[in-house]
Length: 213
Image (cartoon, rainbow, N blue to C red):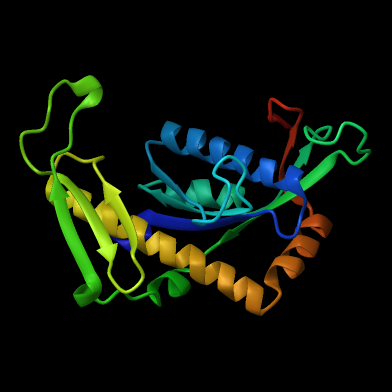
């Protein structure tokens, strides 16, 4: 899979409150929907310690011929106008999320030593237990020094599942490195100020997260 067909986006609430984390979750759903309509593979990686429902940040991986275009229309500030779903008396109604492209250089700098990887195969069943796969096409890859792992049963072939699992494993480390870099450089605070002051590239309104023009 060549780098031209894959794009990575860091979706972050910066140092925003819980409402911004909810906006992150809504943005992830919307990107996934648009990616699937374009025939792209969508994968969202969240921190291990994060609340899966409303993560503070996530790394989105888009794979397919139109990945560049989908990534470009999301890069920047996303504004969500909605009464707080958590604080009934909160007067604030504007919540901001930053969507930042991860450069190919940043992604390319991440190297996993093959000697540190344990690769396991397993039998992957079909939907509803039907059309069971009779070969061990599922793949799980574990980074032995850290115990971080990722798996894939999405593809029919073991070779393709191995590549997808490896991409997901790399995404976990890439998200971790992005978060660590943001922490070290106080990037979350800087990016949150940036995304609040900048002009939003897309704006949504209400609990249904409907886009406004």
